[in-house]
Length: 464
Picture: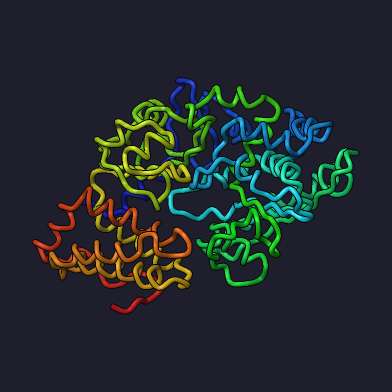
């Protein structure tokens, strides 16, 4: 059985031209489907990130429509009717979330969460890289809908080139009159700040994000109060994912009913999936929600790469439960179908796992990630993530006992739902599912008592 790292390396190969309707791009092996392109129309387009190209293709017409006579409540109503759900992972209805802002609020803030850092998830990065103006236009409309006069685009600190790209796009907007005072002569004022995060996973949680911008530790806060009531500087604040706000201009221009024509009744619209692993065509795809995984896997991804066999899939980023191949093949890619199967749509960060992959090594990699990224504020998370990592590592050293498997479950029980933010659950859900679905691989290590792992290769230098 080959290591997880070797399996991941195999996923770096580029796309195979199909000549069957799929568009091949020239950046990191990304391909796009020939289906609906509400979000990905300019992916791979030459100079698609520039204002002139965006305007030529109808960009900022939705903003002109909104500021040309619509009221904030009307914009909220259209987005709510569209059924757009938060694309960061939680799936909460976007229009409903906007409605939580108190009507009497004198100052409202709006944050776009671009702190994308979950293993396997990279779709927001492509939205901002290829088409930053789509997100900026959606941000301006969203700010108008909640009556915000100051907005932020919070980008993960490691994405230096992305910060520069978005900042240049924002500068173009100021020069064109889409930002600043009296936008398009409407009397609406909005300033937009591109904020560089410090590179902490937990700053992707909305209260952690807000705290970090306020200059404090990027640690989550207890809710309630929710940010929509008391957020940045104790004022009402809305935090939305990049993909969520990037969907808004299309909804405004085409209407809620047109958006609901894609997807399912409870999961309307399209969704971006970032796919990694040894499939023939890894990359970022936009598909209608509700597409059968079997269709997506065979027709869009082209199936497994030559010589590979599907073992399991993590559908929505590393924090959601894994499903074996026979279970995921019977699922549709929407919130409800995946929930019924015991996992989550999450961020759409799909990790394809080949049969040759060592599942115990993979979960060790994930447990190290969550242990390393725990902010340390809550004891169950701070200690529990470390214990999970150490227990899995002990198994791979050939020193495990049957009691260690019970101990893993005991530690998970002391973590799930007992912390301020979901990071603890983000470690528990994959840990429990890996143990439940692939218990035989854990038990084999205990029976063999043969070390399969070298000494610590992690930079943090943990103590056993």
